Length: 121
Image (cartoon, rainbow, N blue to C red; front, side, top):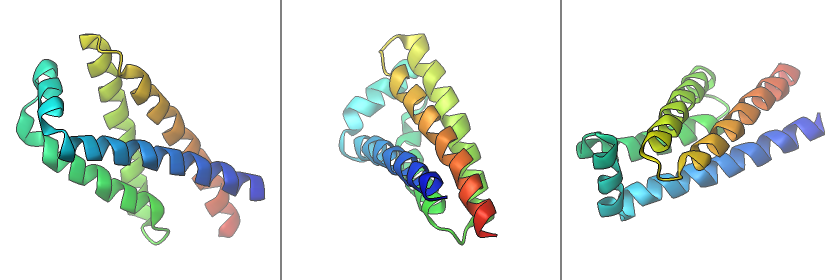
């Protein structure tokens, strides 16, 4: 059980760092991110709301009282990372690897979250 918790906290912690970096880019490097969004063909008015949603999703992942919200956050991040992977891959900017890393960390976090919550119930 201790190993499961360690794997869960390490994977969720690394995922959190990655998402905080991403949200920070959205807030503090708006020009660079807006150029990227334009290359994707996405509207730039989504940048700030998307950054806020990433932060809210992290709050849901770390709060043990938000069981249903945590499931929705995992699902939302799953789809966001798939879309990010293909968006970056299609424009060829090389950033698709970070989306793939985020996906792996998300899956590990989800699996080990299930293992430790099953044991706690």
